[in-house]
Length: 449
Image 1: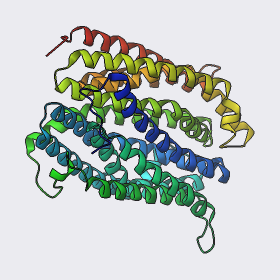
Image 2: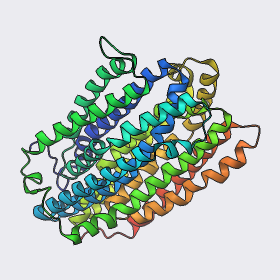
Image 3: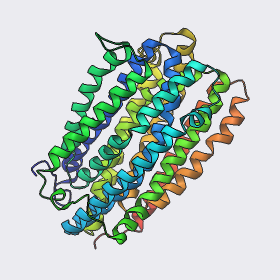
Image 4: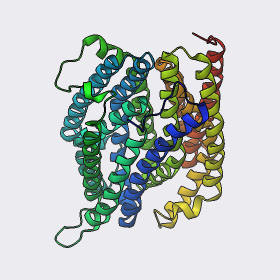
């Protein structure tokens, strides 16, 4: 396909940029999905935002589950293609999709049948918020299949050097979501106002359309997907290798989101609407980390293919180039969140008390943006080398420190802001540790195969 980039031979900066820009744009589109939901839900009120925010924690948790198939599939496909083994790469893609479908089915069942217990974890007091949260959870996670498939398709296509297709597919989904959100949230014509449930239905329908676009597009592929048969049993050895690579990353994401759930439970001690501050603030902050995450996906494929081909010098140069780019992006994000906190937050919520806490959230989290961006890009590079276990150990240990740190700081005059400072401090430390670790890894890497 013409949109595939030669990650083994093209000059590093042009190749990395051509691959990364559509991925970053895709991440921004995904961010726009979330911000569109939040902008419309925010007009309903802080209670609705709190409902979506609490239920949305499980949508985030589901990303860890899908990440097992996505990361394992993406890395192994990249390695196989780097070695010139297209049939083997197709088998890994096939196995990743099969695992994703299985996990989506199981996660959906658990979310629907145990929704009351899952939302009950946050100990919210307002019955209306609880009811809305349960409905939102049942819809978004009960129909999580489309989200899982989209993530896996994106990872596999990126591994082949095609980042344009995921971008175009997600743009189509965004347009549909932007049209459906106000119509379903507030009602139009014969369609009744559905509030948070409307936002959930709009998102799921848009994701289903994105899946359909992927299915139509991959039928033309002659590199990988023409050899994939989703109904055919995949070799157990391939499945084990996907799990071996993807499991640490999946566990890392699930623990990370689990820690965030515990922090959210702490946040409710300051009132149910405090969740709205966290939800809106984190969505605004996503302009930074989702962009870096998109670049991390590019460096993952760049490193993966070149590592598979034994081009170690190119692996090192690719990482350094990417690290410089996200360093600048991180500094920009810091400035944006610190100096633009109030006008940005007021786009989503107008209640003065909530806005005041939201400004503090953005300014505190703004301090860590550059370090967080370096952390994300380094995790992508380490995963491209197949070192998902090492990346996960570092992340789990340092992210877990947020809980005792938050307990300590929220008991000081900082109050709610103490939780935000716990997140920021851990992000700064993780960014430093990850960069040092990868530099040491590069020193041990030979110049050539």
